[in-house]
Each structure stands twice: as C-alpha cells, then as structure tokens.
Image 1 (tube, one colour):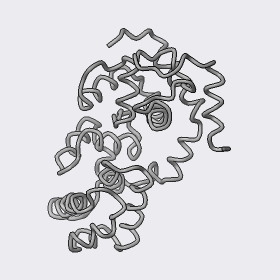
Image 2 (cartoon, helix red, strand yellow; image 1 turned 90 degrees about the vertical axis):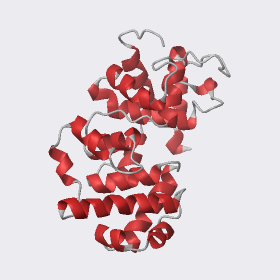
Image 3 (cartoon, one colour; image 1 turned 180 degrees about the vertical axis):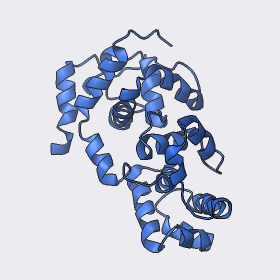
Image 4 (cartoon, one colour; image 1 turned 120 degrees about the vertical axis):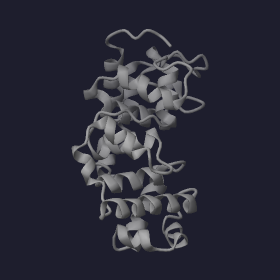
Length: 244
C-alpha cells in the first residue's frame, strides 16, 4: 500500500466526478436516496450478487405484489421468492427479508427501522449487521444512501479500483471498509463512492480499459492495457456516455 500524497484522494474524486457526472441523477432516479431505512436495507439485500437493474426489478415487484411489509412477513416464503425472482438466490433472500420483518414486529411492535435515524452511526452499523445476511457492505449502503451518513461501502468495483490505486493494499474487502473510511474525507464519501463504483463497472474492469482511464496516473496496477491517455480527453469520453 502506497503512502498517499495529500491531494491524491481529492484529485481522483474530482476526475471521477467529472467523468461520470450522471451517476447521482441515476441513483436519484432509482429511488435509493428516498428509501426509508427498512426499504434501503431490503434493497441492499436484493442487490447482493445481482446487478442494479435486477435489484430494482425485484424491489419494485416486491412492493407491487404485497400491500405492505406486514404482508411480506406473513406470506409464504415461496411467494416472496417468486416476487423477487429477478434477483439471484431469491429463496435465500426471501427468507432473510422475512426474518428481519418478523423480528422487528416481534421486538418493536411495528415493522420499521426509522428509529435508526437518531442513532449514532457506529450503533447503526452494529445493529444492522446482527440481521441474517447483512454484512458490513449492506449496512454501509443503508448508512450512506438512506441515512446520509458518510460511511464507505466497499463492493467488488470499489475494492478493485482502490486496490489498483494502492489505497488499500492486499487486504480483505471487509478490512477495506475501515481503511478507506480513514483516508476518505467525509464530504467526499458519497461522490467518491459513486465515482469509484461506476469506474470499476465500466472502465477499471478485471481486464481494464486503460486507454480511456481518467485516473491512470494514480494507478499502480502492473497489468495496464494501454499508456495513459490525455486526462481531459478521457474525462470527456466518459462524460458524454449519456449522449451516446
């Protein structure tokens, strides 16, 4: 893991924000910023090992098939799995979602996680991870997108990009959450997470498209597939994506 110069995180965040300016608008359109904490957690569970399109298809189908969360909790698990079939491992996720809903009903008398809005972030992270199938990434997603807390979620894409940048070294994705939390300023957590995610999804893939990489200069990956492109040209190439 390299020693970061003071401006590197800010420079990477700036380049990615200019390269992928459409990401926040897309996320707003998906509804992730307006979810309740419980809806955000269900959406996070549905997203595991599934792309965002299938996650949202499953989430929307779940809300269309059942009148409320109590109806989801009371339904046969197979019926919930059928509703969320666009996602992978539907029967497992259906059981986990129902277990969460039933626990909330039994322990709190209502099916809601709105009480988390006033809890300290460390407490929220610990609480969410006590549910079956909810790890640090899913809990962090709820904190960041639903509760507006500057918590860094590390998925496959964020892990790959930050490892190639030399920000996290040879560690596990679970450990990467705390390492990135220490080096990313709170005000950059949301925009940088979205930029890293989109960059890993489209450009810094397992076989990377280095010829159009706007953060090539900061990358330590030995398997680069092309020399560094002109930075502004690479940024413009990606920024025009919505128009293509």
